[in-house]
Length: 421
Image 1 (tube, rainbow, N blue to C red):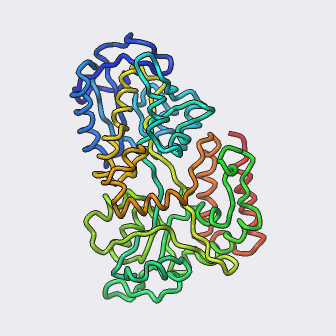
Image 2: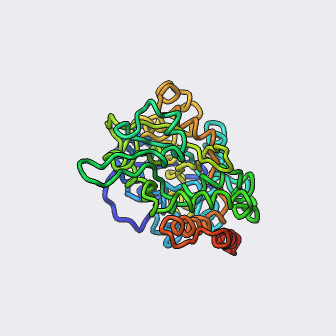
Image 3: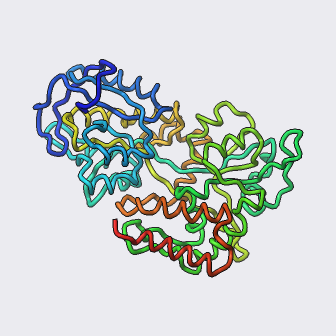
């Protein structure tokens, strides 16, 4: 965007159609800013250089800046004109950003097939995740979910399908001391105060968030009898005072597993290239079960996608759209898979042997097939803080474990979800 100072000189230009843009009327020497996560900067820099080389007709300067995709929506909403032209965000940002007029609609034009390419080349789930009110607003880059990681120094790999496949079995395990201290290692953990993980038990017992398709703002039944069963399970098993369960930021939990302070944790695919890089004691599997009414029920993950979107306030939508399409292309996604551990949304990339035959990606794919997509509707923005409040209060013990208190907490939670935006 024009409000950013120049920090790098990479020439780019475009003559394609996106949203209201219909030609080559852009400033031929403008600045196009693209956001990417801190860990992705090396790869993103390489891809931008390749884009420049393959598109010598483009004269705009490309500036790469660090911006966490998890809070991109709030940053853009605060000052759209100061935000990047090409924005990396999570798919659950799509609905509220599109409704607020912050995103350029992605369409085909006389010299571009952006929308058709997105629909034809990507996994249907990710196409759905960049669609709001029947219109496309994003270029899918990844398919994300989470799995169980464990350290073989505490839980041998031979127990993967027995002890490690059951939360109850892990919490009942006799845990070793941490090093030479008298402190015992915790058995199992996930961030119960994060709505991305808080959902697992509710989905396991059959509850839905905004209906079966995630589109009905009045359909959230987590306060029904089945939801109460999970609440009672959580109040019994997921309190800090129990000692064997640990809730913390997902990366902190992964570090605890790496350092043998925690037997197993739940976190995203990104941990393999970050926290667990080159670790020989770390293994992984799909999510374990919890036992409700004597029946083992697999925890069900959320799944989402990282997507690139084009700022509706951008003065360079044509260049921005071409850049977003390149960064999310089949070959680029294979690079993200290899170098960053991201499972691709592109269907051809998914069938590439480097992805299809990789043991880690096989587990990610299996969990994706068992997951529920994070809804796109704007109302999903109300879910995260409400879920954090309930999950955190379970863990820290401020929510009493009696039936009346748990039911009241769930009823308040549902009320928060149905409140006006």
